[in-house]
Length: 125
Image 1 (cartoon, rainbow, N blue to C red):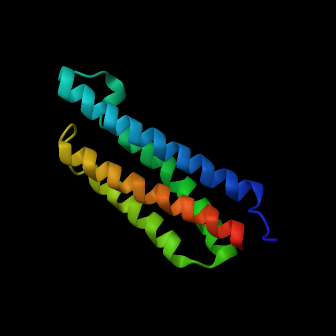
Image 2 (cartoon, rainbow, N blue to C red):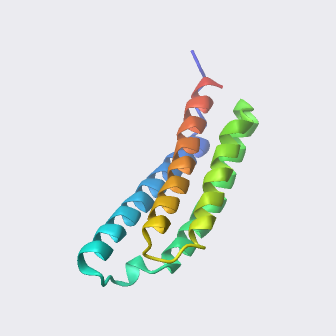
Image 3 (cartoon, helix red, strand yellow):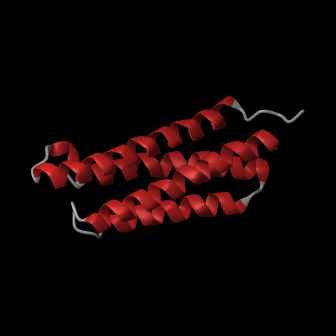
């Protein structure tokens, strides 16, 4: 029977996946609101991406690093790093642009997949 992931590692990955989901909802809601209303509240301001990255970076670093130490699959951490880099790249795109939404969603999705794979690998480790 495989050893389950330690509660802190599992909790960090689950929290990171939840935050990724919230980010995806923000991206999609922002795009819909921008399209329908052309005026949005402060919650759609570009600064929210900086705050999101400030939360995502340390959370991803700790969760994926701890996972890598247990399961040894560097590709999972690399996917997470790539997702973070794509999220950083979204800051360089004009806020409200369709490209910004697509780049943000791609980065967040990569990061969420990395955390999901990390959870699976920890369960097998």
